[in-house]
View (cartoon, rainbow, N blue to C red):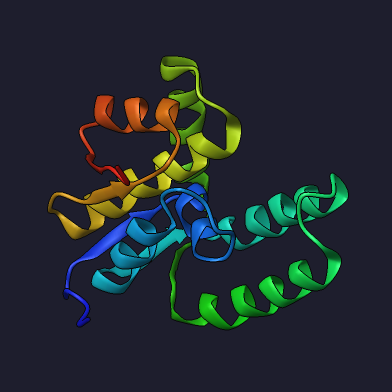
Amino acid sequence: MKRESKAAYFDTSVLLKRYVQEEETDRAVALMKRHIVVTAAIAPLESISALRRLEATGLLEAKSCSTILKRIQNDRQTWDLVGLSIEILQSAERILQDLNVRCLDAIHLASACALRSRLNRPLSFITADMQQRKAASQLNLEVLSLE
């Protein structure tokens, strides 16, 4: 499948579905093939943390975790990462206060809003998290569903 020239913002909840089989994995992979993957610079770190938690709780075997971590290292070279800046962190603080989301979700939302401003066009925001989906809608991001 050929990628669209249009970038879309992918939250870590969607990126991880490429590596850990879940109900929405097929849809997540299809969207990642169709769009240029843009995400916050924290996404690789957040992914590693989530995978290590799965390993620690026994939901992911150590060998599988190691294999997935290597795949993420390779794949992240193709992702466009939005770097953290003072402006993004200040925006994330406002989002935390206004929309009552988790800290890393606020950083993702602020990163997507900053990118939308830079591109000066609508931006698709792809997440598997219901609370984050609602917040993204309130920020006038075009939310794409995995359903």
